[in-house]
Figure 1 (cartoon, rainbow, N blue to C red):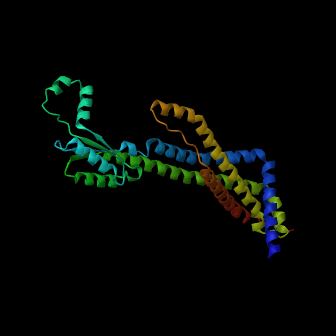
Figure 2: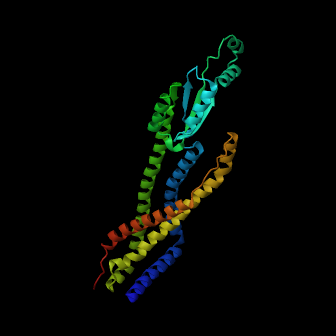
Figure 3: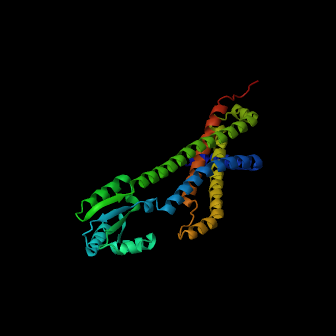
Length: 310
């Protein structure tokens, strides 16, 4: 058993080393193949990074979603503050802010220009209002509707306005972007398999005479196929590294402009690049796609090659 294991390791090590040397000797062709694969893998990664940055910049759109709770006019300010505290302590609520009737009237007076008309009113007609912001993980339409029903059950509440349309639109946008990333990854993954398969097919045709001799002296299809499989894996590793580097460089070039834009809007948002976990996923995906493309091409071509006998 130890001897067979060492022989197995030696055979695979020899195939890996010889394949690496072959790719190095054909550097220009290798660079072209890896570049095409890298660009194909970079696009879904870039889209995924874009979706993640949009979600981080907008707080998954939860900041744009809220409920306005209008209290009954007879509810005093002290009671309104107690209600705001109770609402803020509820699970799924990120914040509950009270806008008192006097604050609302002062703001309306400053912005409307009807100060004299408002002075003629005997009482403040505006109610106390609670502004509720849901937590990011509790901003789905069903969760917001449940929160709205809960707040309406309070005897002090007159009405609750829910920005449901915003929730539906934002959720649809995020879901659409996620589906675009998935579909793009699948399509470009198939493209990577096709690129590797065609490259391996041409390589087998160029080495047909060598393969025939190998088979003539007893080489099996598995033995002949092994270097081509390693070539596909090496293509995938190099392509995954290039794809990650492309997106990282794009992030570095866009980061200053994104920071200036965020500063202009008073935000501390920082553009995030691809993570090292995504690098690992890229390398693994590249290896699998490269191996699969090489295996398909090698299996089809080697089945057609038979050693010539005199």
